[in-house]
Length: 151
Image 1 (cartoon, helix red, strand yellow):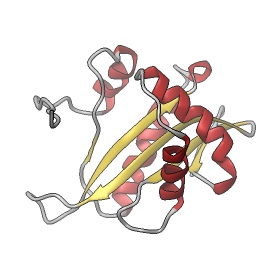
Image 2 (image 1 turned 90 degrees about the vertical axis):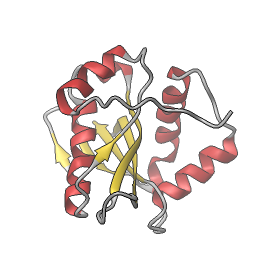
Image 3 (image 1 turned 90 degrees about the horizontal axis):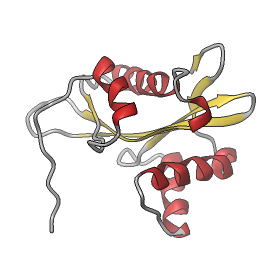
Image 4 (image 1 turned 30 degrees about the horizontal axis):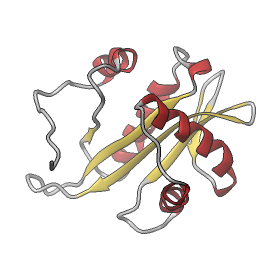
């Protein structure tokens, strides 16, 4: 758990579902997408699950209110004996942007990866996400990879 003057980063709890849902809705809306309620329920259950293939969830909390979230997954990598960590989702409530929520959540994922002996953390973002990219350029290394999806 990470503590700052304005918020605490901690693992997601079952009692966080309503507030987590509101944050994840904001995250999806930013990327101009949505998901049916069944996916919200499934994802939340996976975030709290104990299957090693499931995602892990962390939240930033300020005065009892969730103000940020991140979801990450450890998985094998074909080029390394060690696992790698994929940071799937990262979102800070717009009212908390610029106060270190995103950085603290990423650093908490870095700490979880270190604790698990996982040397690499990676994530993707949209090219238009200029606000987040300013942070990412300070705490990560932009790679030359271009992502393709099955058509």
